[in-house]
Length: 544
Image (cartoon, rainbow, N blue to C red):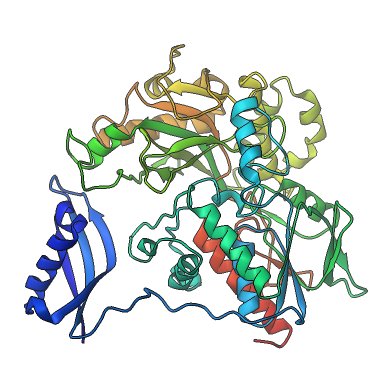
């Protein structure tokens, strides 16, 4: 017999197996010798009051043994002789599309422009050590996509679009901790995720799928009817089959060649801003209402903040407790910051993006911001992309991102050092040369962000920070650092697709997928969309 019960316990009880077992058995009113096992099904932290509690749902196995596995493993087919489907991009959308295709009896041909997940490490290290960005191998490009080395958070609100539990179970089947099946905000950690990704590749190859690295797609092959029937790569490769395009939100060259091939695209709203870094001890003390911080039994504290300023949202994004700020440029003449956390979330810092909502209809502000950024000693770029800033251009939001990143690069004096400012100086329009110690390994350069960043960003962020400081005493402090610039929050483009078939609205055989196509916002939602696109291809081929 199995019995599920809800518990509300102290952090010490939740973290101590013997105490938790005793509490659960007592709450269930069962003799201890009848309980053969106990398993946590759900776990969340309630820190709304001064006394922090942990809410648990636990399952007691009464008079029967606890099962060895926490999930039902997926059964994959052998597909080496089955029809090919080309999957472009080995991020979560592409990997899960490939795995789902194998489930359905189709052979994925997975093309990744970058290197395998472990070879990426050397190129990523050079960004910090030598300020050199390899345009094909960096935090954004390579096996695993942007999530592989930038955190591995698995929290999503995408339950309406697919089976979140299945996605988490596939991660567990490939080596992730089963804690991700339990926690309200699951997280693998950037130190563990690469081995999980490598195991996924192993599954694809061992079941007959094909994986090719350093194959950058530059052209769609179309038949006499105009339908997509394959791709060509810059390296001279040609691969045939329906195409799932899962290239991620930073593959700007993909948007450009689609535009050149007259494939319809649309400008999409996004958010841009900064990365805000505090000491982890301060965030722990604020969120857990204790000078001692998290203590011995709680994880590094998270926060989620939002406000409405000037008719647009100002909010925290990709909060990384006990983490690091990382350089996330994907090409030359860019400075971009992002955040990540190791599995233990045990660094001395906590950070999050602090961003401002921007919509395509904000044409005046978009154009003014881009013109301002491009005017900063970058006349060639400004001249080359002036037409793209027109109100009806589908890539205008992308060029805004790019112009802000280039302006930031100029402020960093052509290095990967992040222009930065104390939080209180940014809010009050002041400048102090000395900055707090930071986790950002390429280093900081003191810069008046309040002066050179676009006014629509600065003024909304300033007011947002004031509101957050009133809401959480101590949050607005000179010991926190504002780092520029956070631009890669989501895709700046949507590649339109039919709601029923998931194929491009105007181009049969092309299945825009995941975050880069504008249909996801993180690892899990991209994985869900990858599975949905695989299902759509199978249906089109009569194999569903």
